[in-house]
Image 1: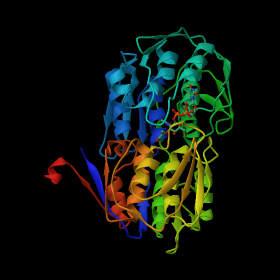
Image 2 (image 1 turned 90 degrees about the vertical axis):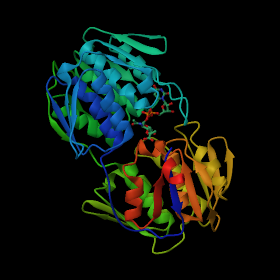
Image 3 (image 1 turned 60 degrees about the horizontal axis):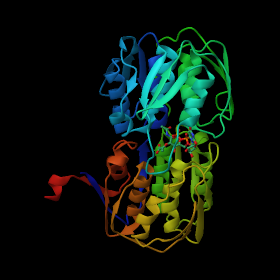
Image 4 (image 1 turned 135 degrees about the vertical axis):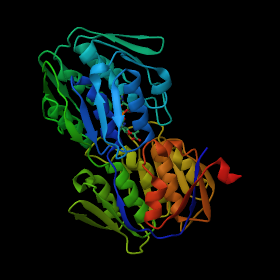
Length: 423
Ligand code: EPU
């Protein structure tokens, strides 16, 4: 199994190109199933989760071609299968995103229930209840969500928790429903807006995306289009924090500052200079030690849970005490236990972590438990004294394209090792 080896102590300085957003590319690829002619999606990040989604579309019979620049062409007209098997869903929960499109377009779907994961229980009851409100019959059987429907009917759906993929599944399904759907308490993430814009480019009638009330006027059919995925705000935020923790300077090329307000606000509080430029965002610590910051995760435009672990790493070596409250997922603190092994001073009280910055972390072998946790351990490794080995980095490959190359481009001493290298 591959691991990343990082020699700490180098101040990052340079520019990194931000890839397309994983969490926009995945629903957009799922949404191609709704079209009745070929669709081209570009700026798709080269990630394991994307490969899994492409494999899923292929297993359903869709014709998918990918060129060397990750321009993905999907011809959904050859789709013959409407099942998402457990073996794929268990490696990527986002496979649940084919549920809405399949029911809306084909009137049937058999999608494995994702089950719990390393960060929490993550139920999908809101996805299911929304489809039922639109007229689908849904049963849970043998670990599968089995949905059957004629043409879906528009409905007013009040989601009792703000859910990103739940909002996406129901918005996609509503596009081909008969009549108007109103989604209330909808998620407002930039990735929802990107998906809506993609659906609109295919002929959907959607308004209100980016607010908590989304209106969808169902249409008879959606057609092919060419769409470019937006840049990944979490990848950008991760490199900016990596720069800040080392006291360095990182320019994230392609990053959109307007999607990073909460994150940039916290970096400023930590003492960074932030430059919002044309087509880039730059963070410069001018060699300073970061100040500890308090974080409370919340749905967009609040502070993203997907950036919590990276800021926890920042707090471990910051000046002062920072409190982190995780309100979205009940078990998203596993990285903190690993950081303790690197000498971090952390007290855990339920969903709150109190982190007292120490002058230095010391390298240790650590293990990644989920995608963002792995990124935070790499960030911690950048400032630890000695050589940190981050194991189980298949998690990182699910969501960060060429992380070691990008960090090395900023000056980090990092390399990927596989079993052969270890001899
Ligand atoms: N929830 C329910 N019922 C549902 C759906 C969600 O109770 O039917 C709860 C969840 O248990 C959680 C909260 O609602 O407590 C919010 O979860 P949400 O549904 O928004 O999460 P998600 O859609 O499964 C997406 C991202 C995650 C990101 C979260 C929160 C994708 C593919 N995944 O997950 O990304 O953390 O939104 O912003 O978009 C990652 O990229 O590392 C990642 C985990």
